[in-house]
Every structure is written in C-alpha cells, then in structure tokens.
Length: 576
Image (cartoon, rainbow, N blue to C red; front, side):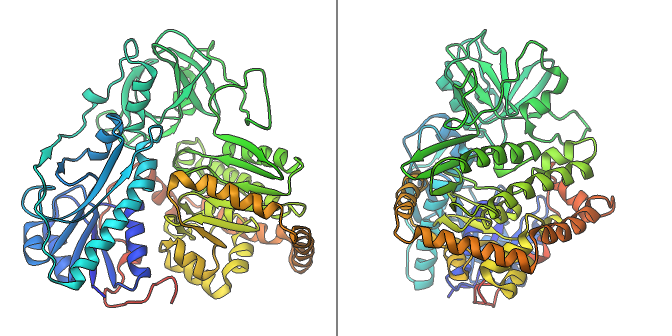
C-alpha cells in the first residue's frame, strides 16, 4: 500500500471519488487543500505528512516547486496526452469532440507538460453538459487512469512516457463563449451553454441586467425574435434563438465591484420583476402523467411506464431541491402511485440523484430561516409519502452522486440501486445541521445504529462498493453513465414480474405497521424538526455562515479538520 497525499483546490466530486476509492482499496490517504498564494503553508503541510506519493485530482494552481522536486507528484489533467491548458473539458464540449481523455502526468515546471504515467479516454455524449460529463464519463476514466498510475508507482521501475507534442489551448474566455442570438443556431447556443453549465456560465446582457446563463435544454415548439424571453416554467426561462428556442434553468447576476458574490438561482427567481408581464409562466407538467394545453417542451420531472413498472425521473440543477421542487415531485409521485404498476423507480437517467435542500434559494430568501424550514417540511412530506407507500415496491436508482437529505430521500425507498461510479455522502454535519428527512428512522434501519453514528460523525464520502458492503445500498450496477437507465429498466421490469413480489409487499405493509406501533413517523419527524428549527432560528448558528460561504463560493482558508486523516491508517474509514 502507498501513503498518498491528495492536493486539491477543493474537495469536489472527483477529489471525493479518488479519496474514497483509494481508501477503500487500503491505501493510507490524507488531504490538503491548496490555498492560493500560500505556497509556503502548502509546502510545510506536505513535509509534515511526508507521503510516498502526492496526487492532485483537481488543482487549479501549480504545485510549489519545492514540493514537486522533493516528492513524486502526479496531476490529473482533464484532457488527452499532449493537451495543455485550463479549459480542456470546456473546449471539448463547446467544440463537440466525439471522444476525449484524461491524463495522469508528473508535475514539472511547465503546467500539464510532464511525463505521462497513465491515460484513459471516453466517448462524449453530444447532449450532455460539462459538469454532468465531469462527474460521469470523465470521472470514470480519471479513476481508471489514477488506479493504473498508483499501481505502477507502487510496483516500482515504471518509466513514464514522454507526452506527445504539446498543444497549449488558452483559457476559454467569455469572448469565445458569448452567444450571438441573431446568428447562432440552436445547436451552437446549446453547445456554448453546456460548455459552461456549472462554472463559469455564459455572460449575457438582457432585461436591463448582466447575467451568467447556466445550463441549456432544447425547446421544440415555442419561437420568437432571437434572444427574446418567451416563457418560464418550473423556474426555467425559455429564450428564442435564430431557428428555435432553448430553456435556461439558472441565472447568476454579474457581480458589481465591491459587492457580494451573487447566488446562482432558478432563472425566473433571479429575474424577479424584470420579466415583462406578457411573458407567460407556463404550468409545470410531467410528461407521461399530466397533459396541460401546451404539453410540449422541457420538464425537469418525467414519467414512463414499461409493463408493470413506472419510472419517475427527475433532475434538478446541482441536485438541489427547493420547496417548489419538493412539492412538484410529491405531486408527481402521488400521481405515479395511483398508476396500475407494481414497481415504482425514482431517480434521473444520469448524474445527481439529489443533494438535499437548495441552499441558494434559502440564502437569497427574504427570511432564510423561514425558507429553510419550509424546504425541510416539503422534503419531509415527500419522504413520508414514500415511506408510507405499502402497495408498491419503491426503488431509488442513483445514477450519480447523492448527499445529505438527498441520500436520505433515497433511503425512504424499499431498495436502493446505484451506479458503480456514485459517491454517497450520508451526513449533514459539514453544513452545521442535524438533518431531517426522517433519517433517524431510515439510516439505522439500513446500516445499524453504530454504523449510522459513524457515517454521520465522520462526514466522509462513501464509494458504491463500500456502501454495498455496509448495507447502505442493495445493488451496484457496474456500467457507464449512458448505460445506467437501461440497466435499471431491465432489472426493475424483472423485479415487477417476480413470483414473490406479492409476498414482499405483504411483508412490507406488516413491517410498516409494526414500526408505526413502536414509534410513529410523526415522532421521528417532530424530534428532527425541533433540532433543525433551533438552528434555523439562531442567527449565530454556524449553519448560516457555512451556507453563505458555500453558495457564494468563498475561498477555503485551509483544510477542514474532518479531512485531516492520519496518513498512516490503512483501513477504509467508513468500514472500520
């Protein structure tokens, strides 16, 4: 086993996955977050850990020279061998390349120019945004390359290959991202939006303000003058293109000099009263369940039936759920529950399942404490509805990552299936919250009281394999993001026709009645909400400062205590 120190600009999804996967394989791993303009502190931290190998899964600044000269340092670059530059994945999406790659290379004086230890490539789906691709196909390829590089390092004697001719591609600035609404066809607009969907967004000026546009979905019916706002629905804004229209789920106002960092919000919420009164707010709908007068177009919730199985799919930006998301999903769930199906599958076709409450909407609310409580209550209503469904078998299908209340939402189901590349974070502590979603009932029921306490206290990410060994999930589907939905469908349809399904449903109903007699769900919910309400109503509670720091992207001051794992420990911290 190799003592590894992860250097990262943030403990983001890829860093979490690499950290959890290496630990699950027995490697002692510690983490140090790189704070800009503090090379001396970072160098001292590396010397203190004294690792055998330094690995940088996501680093936006150079490794200090004293570090890469003293220790072998491997950097994960989100581009194929020979690619160099800070916008590798952005350019791949905007230029619509069919295949892309990941390279693990050795740090040298020049950025992205060192010898290659490992590389892997992957297909780029044409209709997937950068952040989804980063957490999906790219993360899978990165893990393959990282594990190969670590194995080669541990074996000794490996000579890394010289990279092919370097191609330096500069930062993808807003000048190249800018949308020309009069000239750009819909396909080009979508490429630009998808290449900047999470960060940095596409800067645009309209309705008397400057906004960063985040995310893009095609609209096939509405049309109008290029650039004009045509409608809103479920918080998203529809704008006309030269030959069609696109839905933009989120906006972020451009920061004014000296002002606070604006919060990314659902587009209609961000615009507020700037929207012209003649722009209609179209009713939210669920394809397959509801059919209003204009049933075409984009929807963040959909429904499909295959035989005796129903699939309620949802996908919210960043996996965040505000009160409105929860209420609309609850209404869709109730409608799906009324359908003549035996098995009901919840979850999107790919990417996030859910990350819990929408902290941006809470931060931007006139009364964040009241909005926090309203969101939690709406999420609890959804969870309770799932828990009390005794006439159907409910499956939560996690195509990607899930965290906090979003993971507890999944645990309300009868079975939890996840993709092999999923990363789970079953805790709330890092946001200063006790948690709700009836987790004090569901989590111990899945993993036992002792493991539940360990997972919530340690607040570390869990791999799919580790989750399976803990009993946190029932099934891991070893496939890529593009294959997950079909794999789930086939497995669920088989489950719906199994001979013992009626027996299982009877046992489920009896178990729910026994549990309710011992302690009603309302008692768990009341106890959780009492602790949450105390935090929401306390202006000095850490939750408020942590929430603001998270949604306003304030730079980290150093490595959090929960990541300061002893590098000499070899057992997986979640399993031991």
